Amino acid sequence: MTEIKVDVNEAACPLGEIRVDCKGQTCPVPLVETRKALRRAKPGDIVIVTGTHPSSMKEIPMAVEALGLELVSVEGVERDWTIRIRR
Amino acid sequence: MADKVTIVAHSGDMDKLYSALIIANGALSMGAEASICGTFGGLERLKKGGLEKGPLSKMHMLGLGKWMIRRRMRKQNVASLERMIQDFKELGGKILACDMTMDIMGISAEDLRQDLIEEYCSVGTYWMEARGSGVTLFI
Image (cartoon, each protein chain N blue to C red):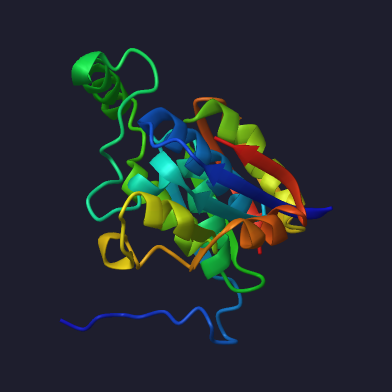
């Protein structure tokens, strides 16, 4: 079977997406996993974090600000949210 | 003052070590620097196989209290200390081991998790870390 690989570094594929599933995880895992993903991401990549830990819904945007990155969106409710960040 | 936290991990109690690592990892996640200086009980936990061995600071009750708390922690999906310390290292955190404690307690470098430890040192190095830190904690 042929495996299809997408190279997100290629100019033809300008936007990479990194998904981080933190559903069911508690403090400090969502924050730490977000930071780890942002470190792996290339400039311009979008990191999409999903989670269910209430405080992280407001603290991840605080980290984004502290890191000087762009908060694209925060959607959902405290116990089921999706946050998009541009590196 | 620099965006940095320096924590003296003096206690080897499980709950206090959780506090130290959660604060340190939170700071690193927010883009700050973090150092943990292990001394006395805290250094004991850096021995090979020692990380999860700490008692509860209160209501340990010969291990019954710890067993109950750990059960609740598992239920709430709290990460292990091992995972937290690996995250700490991955995010660039520094662990310093107090060499005087090592002498007093008869701990050699071979007894310790050398994969985790950045430097073996004493109060001078702690001070150089702490003086440039916006936040310092003694746990």
